[in-house]
Image (cartoon, rainbow, N blue to C red):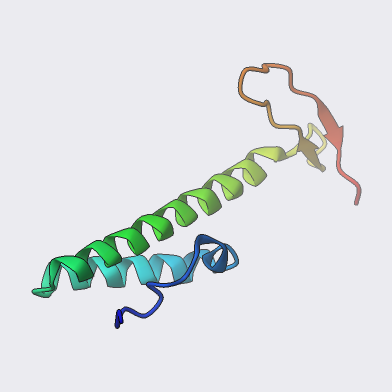
Length: 99
């Protein structure tokens, strides 16, 4: 019965959503919640969708940050992949990238 577009989407449905689209949707939800006199049920549904989108954005940003940290250049200026340290494991190994 909800008229909210996307309110019935699961987290899996949003997983493939591009970061920029997720941010636009999140901004739209915030604008609607701040600027409209909405019923409590609608506010809660939009809050839930916004929370899912915020988590998705955070996840995508974390993935991008990890990729940036892994891709570095050696002394000769050649790119190589640096293995990321896993939480609780301070051991980091460097391996040249192919190509």
